[in-house]
Length: 341
Image (tube, rainbow, N blue to C red; front, side, top):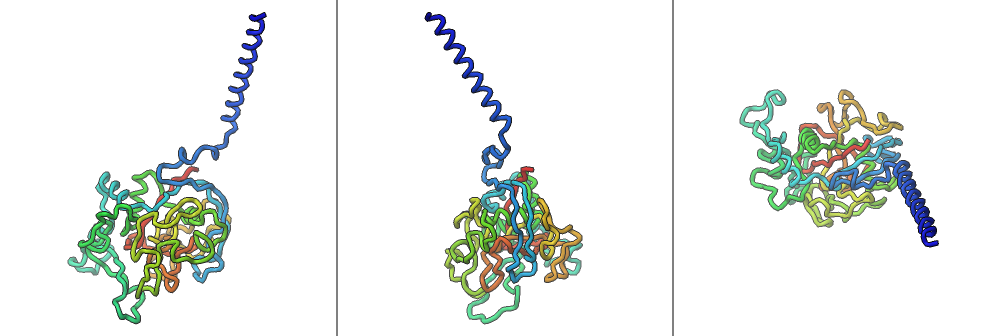
């Protein structure tokens, strides 16, 4: 009797084991790739953005280059949680010996009429209007500064000591591209960047909603370029992650520094209509009517600490501006993506 009972129990146990194994194998066979955790798909410091369709651009904007809005689709991808920092860029330079565009002398081929004494390395540095000034010529706040580069943001007398967690600046497009190749990542397409910046909010004006707030991002408060009230706590660049993230957990998609994208600049979004993973116009078609003497410009996104309601006002996901690939300034940085498709 005892032996018979034991044999029955053994059969039941074996059946249960066989059922459990079969169920486990079925779960593996039918599991979707989307069920894999984001941690296993994205490198440390990146966030997985689910693919989807959205409306890129804005029909309510006063800026022609943002119109007309159109529906596009992007596949899922990973994106840096923050802008690339001084510390991260320093590791790249230490590993590769890379020299940025701002650290190189100006070439005779590009500037044939420039005397040799003015070919020293440098970059463009922002300077606020002098106290008491009532008006200033447009763009006069930008000053060519010899010795200005990512290690010396305001010239040779400045440094990035104790600013390891600030976004790296004075980065030209080829500098960002070199870093991306070293890191095994890519510069984001404009559609990827804007989709991620919206943080899951459909049609919202800002990364946080529809009402502007001086405390939601590092932007300019006051009248640009005459005075900044520092309502958000910062006059210039802020450390990454100083403000609340958007719905996807991404920091500084609005303000702080402009960010490079891989797209060539063209007015509007007609080249992207209903496309999947659009990349914009071809290089030979790149043109900004506001800068007729500068062909082949890249799209930059997000605005910066210099954007104010009375000037620029591009602290919105739909906002976009053109920038020459060889130009870096005190308000341009970048973040990267890793494509999963």
